[in-house]
Image (cartoon, rainbow, N blue to C red):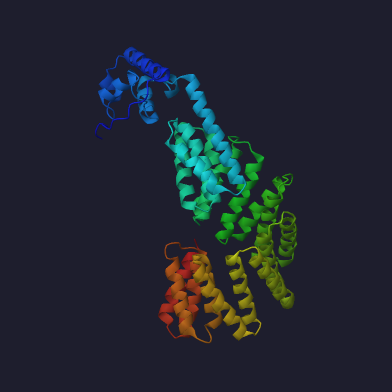
Length: 439
């Protein structure tokens, strides 16, 4: 790598810079190194000389390079008061960003944290900024950015050997990867965090139950419902004393949905009912709508069709009032399927076409895929050709993210192709569906 020749702008003379330069010169002389040797291979002799004369303020990266050669921490060369002031200001900014993130103002937190990455600081201090920024990105729904900065923080902590912060950062990184639908990777980071807690490297009961909950969610998304329920119930047992109604409401919802998938509908309705009460207590109308929607699915499963349709209508109204068009469209999709299955084919198919069209306007890929599968399922007997085209569009949207939804689409496509007499191609898609089901 060539020697760096970029000149840093001269800094105003100050006692702090003279102090830094003097200590650097003394340490270099004691080590028996020339200025060229100290800077090599990245920094020139002139650059080192300018620092020693107090003419420029070195970047933390160059100071850490030279300090490592001299066997000293970078803080050894900085004036204590200056170092304390910088750290204090940064700590205040990070604390403020955490508060804004907790208040749902992640964008403001990101604005505060991003400039801190440009400051001169140690690698460990930088990792602290990266962790705070990762949380803000995650809360803002920016999964890719969250995963990038959290991986950078994890690399720093692993190089430093800080087992507690490695575990905490893994827990955060798992959440970012879950947001990106990288469920297997997310599960591995959550599991590593739990193993660190089991080894006693991190003692944080609240974090532990959150990690158990999040790990359960990764299993749920991979259709491993028994494993998901096992982790949710562990979280419920170990987090019984946590007075956080929002978290408990989310956990009860996850337990209820797992029971639903395992066809224990009575248990599902009981837990979903507890979840809805808690979400109503904290006035989260969007989540109330979502839970009511899930309750409608449970009622439909046990044969209470009229009550289920009424519950769907209530949920759809609440989703609209909460300005949640994605949820509103998803409810319309399930209600449309229920109409088709209940003999109201014309009304149900019309509802499904409307939901599929709206999903396209909303530009929500996952919702568009779900509505495509639902519409194809409803029309495959009446128009298998249109059903095939709809499913092929869904397959195209999922090629970059294979998972359970793609397997479901392959299975539906296999059925449609079989109805059209294309047996060989139908068999091929059936095999693909089977391969995905084993992952």
